[in-house]
Length: 367
Ligand SMILES: Nc1ncnc2c1ncn2[C@@H]1O[C@H](COP(=O)(O)OP(=O)(O)O)[C@@H](O)[C@H]1O
Ligand SMILES: N[C@@H](CCC(=O)OP(=O)(O)O)C(=O)O
Image (cartoon, rainbow, N blue to C red; front, side, top):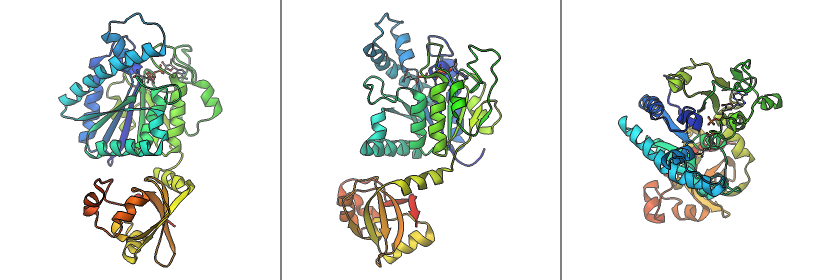
């Protein structure tokens, strides 16, 4: 299989229940086996799992509850713990560790929370622990919820810097019409551009199990492909679905990424407001320009303006020549304390470490 990739696999309720009212354990084991295989082959897998509400209903023996938000949240609270137990049990069969993250839109929109969520996700991925992610349904309000796991999985894929987002559902992909309503509908195998005509083809969920149907999958594909991520919609019931999608041997709908991930990062960094400036010594300037290195605190001479972690700052040499711009991993106060110091000393100076570099080379654009 090709070089190491990060793959986000989104499993809809329709897949987890196989279209019934119960979570289908046999199907989950099979999906887990494929994810474990990919991990062992050197890839990184992130799972976005729906099914908390379905699992809650099943566990409480299909209670007759009023159709209120509180009832849904009750079911999600009960079901999420069942669901995570199940993932834990199944992945442990394959000696894989998992870590649960329950997110809301607020975690993506607030800069500090975004960075924390991103760091946790990357820490899990780097340590070969499979993140198992769902929306934090039990606490979300209308204002802060993503609302459906298709859109959530696109945000997760961006957070994870993923190469691929696989949206597994109960259809082989996007059809020219909802196949449940129109048996003559045909599969659209490649989408190079998401047009308004295409959006009109994508209907809602009619099974009563899922949220959003094809229309939220198309929104997710739009968001992720603009960030340089390849998106595939495919049938979760298909034998070895994930492995076949990696090899490109399954009929499905593939959405072509609009730009490369590097272009995406560059575009973001160029578009972001400049929050401050770092002046670096000649050694650091040389490392940035000729070796493609990250900027270490050791090479920083001075820090201008006040900024927070995650903002974009300019990097200049001692003569005032602009060298680069990039995303700072430390806020301005912290950088003033660690500038000139070895990265091993960050912990003793600050009492915490947010990485060994001030600006990582993946988040640094030379000018
Ligand atoms: N153009 C279309 N092509 C395929 N499926 C469609 C289309 N329009 C609507 N759908 C519906 O979308 C459903 C899948 O979405 P959903 O029920 O939300 O599943 P999931 O739980 O996997 O997210 C299908 O069962 C199908 O009825
Ligand atoms: N967060 C909800 C699922 C929401 C959702 O988008 O469901 P689906 O359309 O089946 O992927 C749950 O765990 O029940």
